[in-house]
Amino acid sequence: MNRQLAVLLVLLLQIGCQGFDLRKPSSDIELVVLGIAQDGGVPHLGCQKQCCIEARKSGLRIGPACLALVDNNSGATVLIEATPAIEEQLSLLRDLTGYGNERRRPVDAVLLTHAHIGHYTGLIHFGREVASTDAVDVYCTERMSDFLRENGPWSQLVQLEQIVIQELSPGQVTEVIPGVRVQAISVKHRDEFSDTVAWRIEGPKKTALFCPDIDRWDDGILERLIEGVDLCFLDATFYDGRELPGRDLSEIPHPPMVVTMERLENLALEQPGRFRFIHLNHTNPALRDETIRRDLEKRGFRVAQLAEKFQL
Ligand SMILES: [Zn+2]
Ligand SMILES: [Zn+2]
Image (cartoon, rainbow, N blue to C red):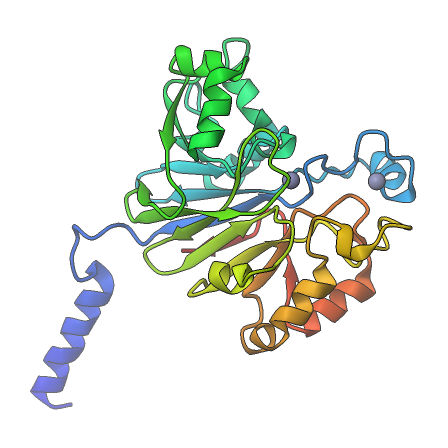
């Protein structure tokens, strides 16, 4: 081997070991899936169909859609949605990564999409009666923030500084932990108490999207949401409408998975695993039907899996 080549090799090895610049943000950011169901989870209160009868019998529990970010260098944790299953989900995060679920600091920050029960009511555990958290940053839009500030019991979390609201306008980009930039993107949804957003999460290496609730993929919103995103978690509340017999598919305020798959058919085949379904209703057959699962995987799609980890 000639000398120049040897020097180049040594240099490359050093770069590989140390990185170009130690001051650069960490690239050791992991995204972890902590829940994949619709707001009510599985089993679902009041459901006396096979889906939930069997789940109760076997002890199966699937928590509402929830992701977490972990910085493996600093141990910082960010929860995306505070669901009613927050304790279970943060314990799982700790089992999987060694971080999170610490006293008074179960998590360093929370991102919220909207004020429906599966998405924010886990905050109730941050109050005096349970964790009495110490100034956990909660990122949300102005309307969501007004809702929390103006209504109990959430208003008490703000008054006691158990949470510190970080208001973001849709489109605004902010760094939640070093090296991770997030952006809220407005989406149309049944907005009684707050507006609704999807989160775009940009890590040092990869970008993810979390869009658990949206009425439909109209006005080019799907294309805008997924543009430049490596890992897209998309609303999969219903499979094809069979879950709601007698209801007109076009009137259901969620894009059925079959419609999403049709729209993303070619991209999914080119990039298998880029599109992952999340927020599945307890009745959604894609939760348990092996034939449906095999078919969608053949087409390049995936159903998000509990405890899956991705490098961002
Ligand atoms: Zn929901
Ligand atoms: Zn059920």
